[in-house]
Each structure stands twice: as C-alpha cells, then as structure tokens.
Image (cartoon, rainbow over all chains, first blue to last red; front, side, top):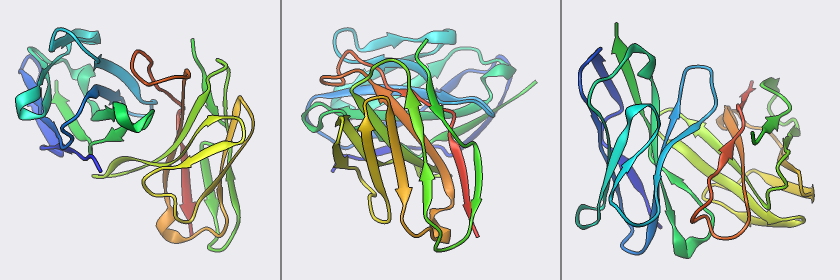
Length: 114
Length: 115
C-alpha cells in the first residue's frame, strides 16, 4: 500500500521567512498529488493539486509545490510567510489505480510568529 | 459552493454505546468518504462509497460500519464505541469518476470523545 511521509511535524518561523515543507510518497505508478491546509478551527481546504503537465504547481495564497518524480517528492513552498499562514498542512496522494482513495501524510503544524 | 455538513460537531459517548455520525452533501456528488484525524497520523480513510448502497473499506475499517441509503447522506456507525475511537471524524465528498480532475470537499469535522 502507498504511504505518504511529511518530514517535519512542527515548524516555527517568523513572518517574512521562507517556508518549505517536505512530502514524499512510496508508490511508483501514476499519482495525483495534493496539499491541503487546515486553519485553526476550520475545515480542510485545498491549497493546490498536481495531476499532469508542468511539475511546478501554483496554488492559492502564494503557495507553490514542485513534483519531482525521480525523488517521489512533492514539496510545498512559500517565499515569504505571514502570520495568517499558521495552520496544519497535509500532503495527500491519490494513486490512479486505486480509484478515489486519498492517502494523507501525518501533517505539519506551522506556527508563524508575528 | 459545495457544502458538506456533519450534524454533530462535538459528542461525548460512553464505552459500549452505539454512535451514529451523519454527513450530508448538497452537490449531488457520487463519492463520499469518512476519515479520522489523529495528531501525527494525519487523516486515515475508514470507509468510502461511490454510489447509493455501495461501500468500500478504507485503511482502518475495523470497529466501524457505514450506511448510504440516499445519495446525499453517508453515515458512520460505531457499533460499540471504545476509548481508542476518540478522535476527530471528517466526512468528504467528490464528484464521480476517477479522482483525476476532481477535488474532494471536506466537512468541518466531528469531535468524538469516548469515556
């Protein structure tokens, strides 16, 4: 079965710092890749997704992610974070052969200090 | 906007009780899902359904069952609640067909505490 690893459980940084969250998955076939965000007290929201084409994907709120197939990675980046980016971030993978199932990583809690 | 509504935000139940968690979506989606969310473990799929009366086991179905009698409603049932089922439960829905090109929409979650 596929698995998804997020390397950092907690990240603390100051406003204007750059953010990069790692995500690796363990399936060698065709995948769809997602990053979701959960702000405190709110439901999960889609940040961005990769299905095909350009491996550099731009999402909402200035986030982007790069799919590197050779490394089985889909890292999330933001050049300059704001206090409002404090949230928990989840990487998720859908293996096309497995239908509509999403497999999630363990999440990374990001705290941005004002 | 797609709306996925979970009827109970916070529940406290006793060990051995039967628990129903209800979820309704208003966008005529074929697919519906139940996940549980635990710190450090992310979201784990319990069950999903791709049509009325159809269900498939996810990664952690033990101790749970589901019911989908109507397209818009997907219920999660804990036949005999146990303390290790204390968790946040998330319902989700998506349009039919392969996930490619579609997005999953999540409800706000139900916090269940089993004492």
